[in-house]
Image (cartoon, rainbow, N blue to C red; front, side, top):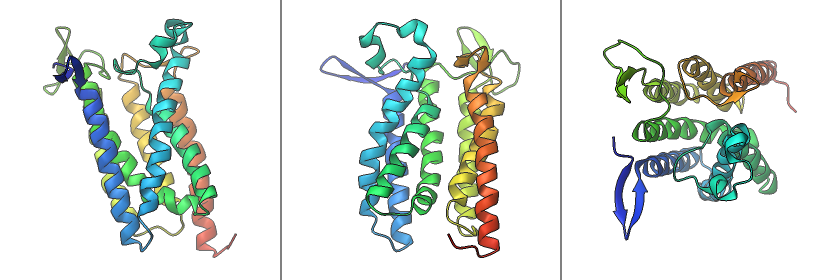
Length: 247
């Protein structure tokens, strides 16, 4: 696939950017209407996005650059050039969650309630954004003979981007159903982290272009940490709600 969608005055507009932007916009709209459905002022979702989206881009790039430091070391122009790709979703999530936490404290909003509202939006945005990897010819696995394999450099490989996109779509549907069944604020967001990380841990094992950390796949390490930490917090919040413990 041609990674360039079209050109404007000599400037190449890439599918990667278009699909990422589409995922972000779909996510914002979903969160906006979810806040409205819950009787909250949906305008704060726009304000939240204005804080979190730039932070996510910076975090995604910073995370990628740090783990690929030998390539970027000393070259500032390479570091800030994201047009060729080089964004890591875990870096984006860490930066966005941290920024969102600060935002809710400044605005005197509930962090957990806000996190529950945006969790489905995050994962559906990821499902859409993964197709940008397909257009760039990246985020694929090793050789396979399966009928749904894709051709990369003349070799049929696992479409890891597709696996993750479909997994994220499934997580989205689960969250939409679960948000009406939750017992405590924060459960939807925590369930998102757990389910996404379970899929990412498995899919990352198939990929051939993983970021590494001391010889191990960074995404698998972080996914495992999220599963454990979020699982513990999920249990605590649900147990407190069950026993009607008010903090």
